[in-house]
Amino acid sequence: EYGLFIIIAIVTVIFVHKTLYRKNKSYKYTIDKPLLIDGDGLTAIAGRPGLIEHRAAPTILTPHPGEMARLLGVSVREVQADRVRAALRGAETWRATIVLKGAHTIIAHPNGRAYFNLSGNAGMATAGSGDVLTGVIAGMFAAMHFDVEAAAQMGAFIHGLAGDLAAIDLGEDGVIAGDILSHVPEALQLYREEHLALSENYYGKITVL
Image (cartoon, rainbow, N blue to C red; front, side, top):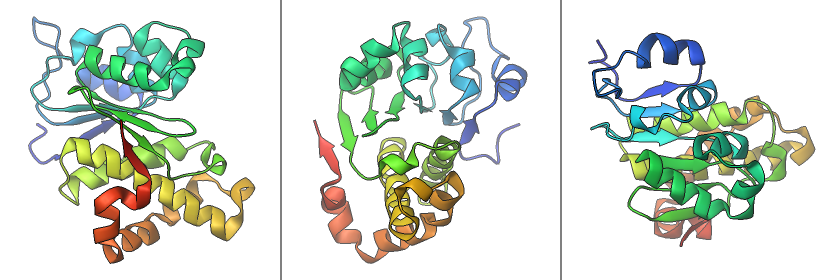
């Protein structure tokens, strides 16, 4: 049924209930494609790590701090007190790549590695920004053929860079999600033109912990 799909992004609880809650006797997702879960999809799976932790295909979760707290069963304060630890714990618990959104997005992988993304700005804390991030990460995987780990890292970086470019044009206070989206092509072009510098250390914006 999903043979033509490269990656499936889930952001609404309706889609989750109709599609992903079809499960086998082991109570695990049966879809064999990479999954990127955001928004209501995260709320729907909270408290049910068994749904995805043993999937054969990789999974990316993109929670904000509140969603991360629900996934871990802790308070938002605990998440914010040590965001790296929370992201790594989430990656281990869910056996998924975690993209913990915030002032500095943290990308954590089940192998115990975590990364800070320092691109982006405060103006990106706007409705719909996370949806753009979901699309960019999915695009990195499907169109640019990054593996899941690299897609999450580069997706976070390109998303933040697009927000930085939008802020240059409009000022941080004037940025809305559509502006971030409209600057993604420019961010990608910058990536292509400066591929060596970006691939070496993403202009210092990605830090290995």
